[in-house]
Length: 118
Ligand code: 5GP
Ligand code: ZN
Image (tube, rainbow, N blue to C red):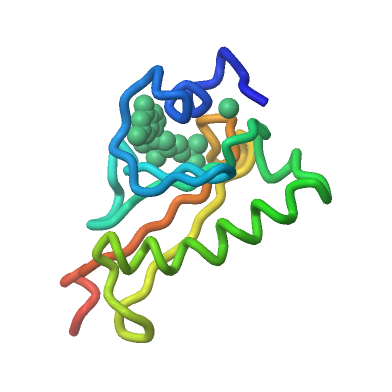
C-alpha cells in the first residue's frame, strides 16, 4: 500500500532520491539524511504503516525479517562486531515518542565512537 502523501513511500518508489542500503520485496533501507552516528540508516517496510502503534499480526513477518536483517546490514555499513562494536535500533513512535515521519522505520545507529572509549 502506497500513501501518496508519505515521504518514505516516495523514497521507496524512487520519487525522492535516497542513498539505498538494501532492498527486497518487503523491505527498503537507506541512509538517514541527517546521521546521528557514524553509521545511521533507516529500515522500512515497503507497505505503508504509520508506526509501531499501527501494526497488526499481518506485519509480524516483515518486522521479523527487518530485525534479522538489521545486524547483517549494520556490519556491512561499518558497525564493528559485537560485543565491542554493536549498534542501536530505535523505533520512535508517535509525537511524544519523537516520531517525525509517519511511516514505520527502524533507526540503525552505530559505528566507531571514540568518545565512548576511556
Ligand atoms: P523520526 O524522528 O520520525 O524517528 O525519524 C525520521 C528520520 O528521517 C530523521 O532521522 C530524519 O533525519 C530522516 N529523514 C527525514 N527526511 C528525510 C529524507 O528526505 N531522506 C532521508 N534519507 N532521511 C530523511
Ligand atoms: Zn509511507
